Length: 114
Image (cartoon, rainbow, N blue to C red; front, side, top):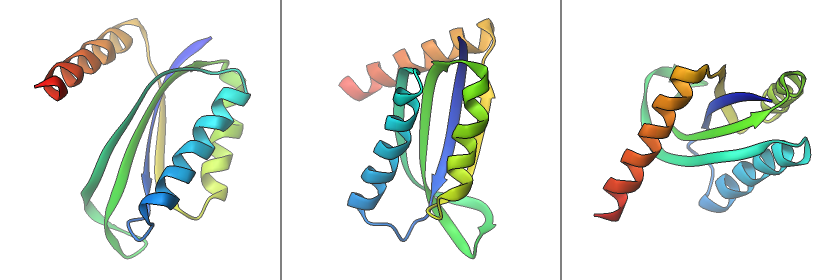
């Protein structure tokens, strides 16, 4: 199983309920394919560097997970099929990137407890 990280941007006109449903849909898809979810992060509404689909902001989400490599392409196909997804990026993490991601998660946990 390989270690992956996917960041995706949701359309800013979606309601909170629609956002939660969409995130849950993609999480359920990964779990149904045998993925081990390591981390989920909601980065919130962020301004985009350039307009995408005439939108200047979007809701960012991050998934960190372990899954077999052949399951990533069908997962990305689901992103392309969903109109609420504006952009996505999936990267495979090597051991150094995975260690950095773990440190980042710990830093986020420590700042959220304050």
